[in-house]
Length: 404
Length: 110
Image (cartoon, rainbow over all chains, first blue to last red; front, side):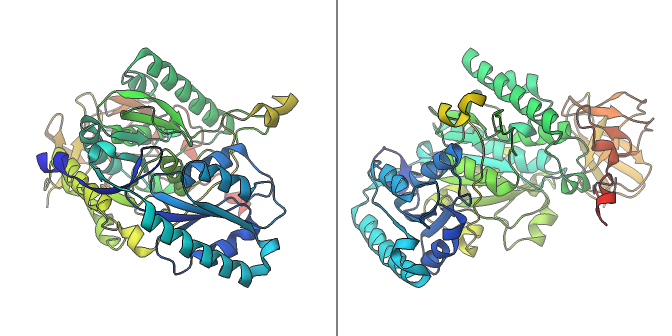
């Protein structure tokens, strides 16, 4: 316990004062047409990750999300690559990132001479950026208090609410007590828990924020007639969305909730925060909230989480760019079946091998080793899945137009 | 190995199986330890009724209402999509209780 609280390691100091556990070059493509070139540039380049937006027509939410990932504490430099016809502007992305004190470059494929020339230009740029951030990034001591950790769950089963999520909750209590930031999301998986959630508010203001986020989520689910529960959840023993919600909420631990942040916002202080990724009502309707697990993980990384946790009872093989992902399961059979991919077996709580506080501490030790540079399983396997889509949150007045 | 299930809160009328159970004795751990006779096979992660439950009675887990009984449920029965429905999700009654797969879109698979 005291070992965990005293753990210290060397991180990367960013100009905004935040500290990273990796020093990555991030490639951002601004339309699907540039996707192949972006991935070809990153191929075989260790510590070069790729994200991008597929649409030609731009979207303020997606731009904010990409900029939050580009200015993430684990990212040292950025190369943005466009085709040349699209709405989203790689030059504006690079300029905005440069204003954060990071080196950033950009180019249009149509001006670089096609696929091969663009890949060669990109590889030469990435090599230069990597050299620069290795040379120039100041190193800094880090502890648990410097960490923001995000958590979501997916592929939940009857063990997720009994062991997987409670183990994360036990760790979140430790992290919050150490002065760190803990972020959990999926307000559409808090359905049925309005009073339970509000009773955890740290302040009257936090209570108002939680009530608004809850009411929007329930209204969203009623309106689109889609509840966040799937065949795999049912097969795993979960029967209703209310039941799944209770299990999912267990990842929050027991500490007060400081308030609600939205996608691409960092927590406004230490402690426990809810991330609201549900679309706002808009003249193009809600759209989808979290169409898959990867989309939700992007949201957590956009809050500045240096490491993210994914709790899955049924098992999953996804990973993430920018922030290493650790996969936790409350189902020991799933852990054994997918041992190549799963990082932490919280099912030992159910077999009596481990108490819940012990599981929380052991998970904390794994998180510290990951922060110290040990690759998570998805990271070592090369998993870098990402998903950035059209969504409407805090839509600017111009886009809302006269129909708003 | 004896089958085991976990009851989270004392007011819960269900417990969650910690291993796959056949019909027979299940040891209930947690809030109110006891032994219950399972009436049928119940898989890991699924729920067992801890007492007789009437139609429309709330099902309680974590001490919170997770839906209502759609038929009379005897003590020791498997509780799932065939006898428990969400109060909110109108689709929850149309799913196959064993696989969880939807049946209301079958007509689209042509």
